[in-house]
Image (tube, rainbow, N blue to C red):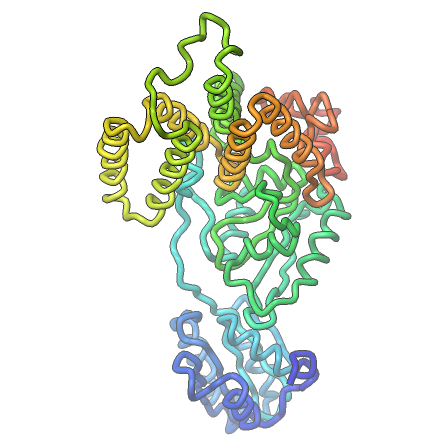
Length: 494
């Protein structure tokens, strides 16, 4: 039986038929966590279906007490449905009429009360998902600022956002994704600011997802949404900070929340969205601009420092006399390009190992790698000291990139440039840089130019990227999101 056929099946008036359906289709009596509580209310059968671990037991007990007390205070001739509906003391009680809805609500963590002889049921929201409390994300720490970050509960995440934007025009559209997982996915936007065409595109792409489930949550949504393929550069931005998500909502972006994921998707985004950080907006404009320029320098270093150094090593005649010291002073039997790749991949090994290593051991691992492996590798002649120096500086530039996805993409670009430089020297560097630039210019994310505001060039947007302006001076929303209301502050209030 397909889901479409199941949706047409009304709830039988006999509660025993519903029970048989739950046994045959959902595994009642086989799955230990799926249960039913059978009551007699005014001499009629009432069944309550639930899933252990997803419901708050205290609320269920209170509701059962309310229903049982009906036997002591009500007459048998009373309309059972209206009576039960009014006695379910909960802020969210929803009538349902199909078996598919019944199963969906039960497996979502709500309880469903089935009444004999009515052909309807009542879904009561008593969900209490296991999870952690909001805390500051490890990858987006700030010196000053809020310490509450998103968690794996979509209800908490939307509440953290609603707390920051108390606007009646803020919308959270709820969708179900996955034929089997039926995962909750919410599209958030400001109705009078966000571009309706963008909202429709995102809604259409998400509703057209046809897959069993999305256990990888927002990453799976991203792959269906932007159809990235083997493009290494991130086409959407992730954040675990509620203040960052709220700031982008106010700009006109659309935020995608996915249940079970502590991060949200910001769309659309450009290359320069991935090099911004909340820290820039927690300091004065001058300090924020300085931090931003330093971060830009780190990004450029992570891409071009090693290829340029290799080019000067291979073509020392290109160096002016006062920079003739650049280049290895020691001879080695291992080609420089091989040394660079070994050292670069060694840093990547350390980064991957640090993710999978408990925190108390990661410090010791870093010391071992830096002191023992690095020093011994130089002593035995595997590396020349300059290779370690420049690879380390390029690695630091990689770590200064706020977006993990962008830092890895930049590393792939750096390795590609290194190969081209080692093969073709100066033409390889020039052609490789040009191809990288052309590739980024031609990349589009949800019909948005990836290299905006550099190309197509927009002076105001470019100025906002280069200089962190004060909030009172930022009157206009970014034009790249095509906001319906372009003014952050109405002109007559400036």
